[in-house]
Image (tube, rainbow, N blue to C red; front, side, top):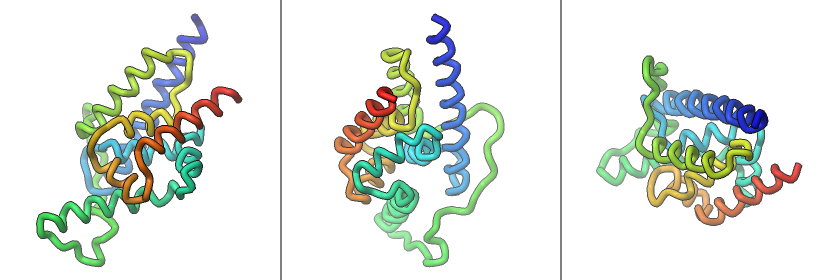
Length: 172
């Protein structure tokens, strides 16, 4: 029982880290609230390394994900007739972090619900970056998925790679 409580506290710390990092990435992109794509970036920074290893298992550089996100936003603007100036192609202007209650975009809210459901089902297993990838790949639409596809990654294949990394982590 003590181990289960200890694991829950560790998972709460991981969630706090994910939320803070995702918000930092969103704010750096000029967005007030993080989306699922920002949680993927946050997962890539977690010390467990499972999210990075899942990308690498797909023979893809995880550091290319940020650029793939930016391309999705640029493509969406071009689709509605707004051309992005060359000197602005790196994203929006950074904004300060929000104050008060933590807020996230609907895609991030759905991701957090997926992680909460995972925690109920697998209370003994630690929350890893690869779990974030599994939750994101369960979605049907969104910037995060379009960015994966722009990198040549099929979400189902990334989910398989993430699950494999979770298994490897559990064996160690």
